[in-house]
Image (cartoon, rainbow, N blue to C red):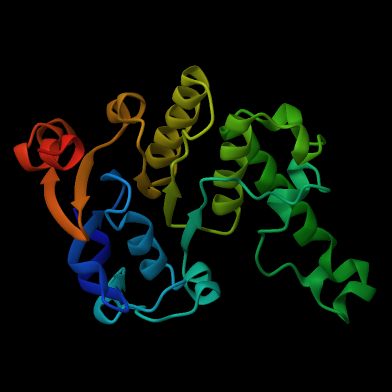
Length: 252
């Protein structure tokens, strides 16, 4: 199975602090991968380097074989590598459907001149709306299509974030703690939907998550970090039972 995203020897420092020290990993296509580690291990810094929010001091980021190291966030996003955040950030004054439509690419109606001619963009607008409803149905939030985003539950907001990523044409989605702040049952609903997206659409996921008891049944591969380094990788159950991983969580 080919690698969709390859990280080679990433190093990132902040003054005298080494946040990432020669980090390498590969995300296989069509898999859901989890990245675990105690607070301060470097997980979010790594995501920031991958997505262009930080520039790595050394190393490479390869997206489907193309070197995207140092690309700005908007260019990484345009290439199909999309991240979501621990705290969802929908457009609060827009409906659920409108939130998805904001992520649609290449709508001619957004052009200043073409917007004046309804005939030039109406078919594309219809296509975008149909696509949005397809994703809303997949995520089981289509019944909320005309609800303001502020009325969604925490779990529904996490699904809305995933829907916007899909609407943008994401091939890889990096998710930062999708289970944070939501009840276990809702967390399972979210993870079930992410698994369905992976299986039906072939989207690759890298998930940072601390609530391991909730996510482990859904992931295919795991990486563990500590002190800015990858300390273990493999099947999730094997990684969790690795002595160095246990020590990094429990100390001693």
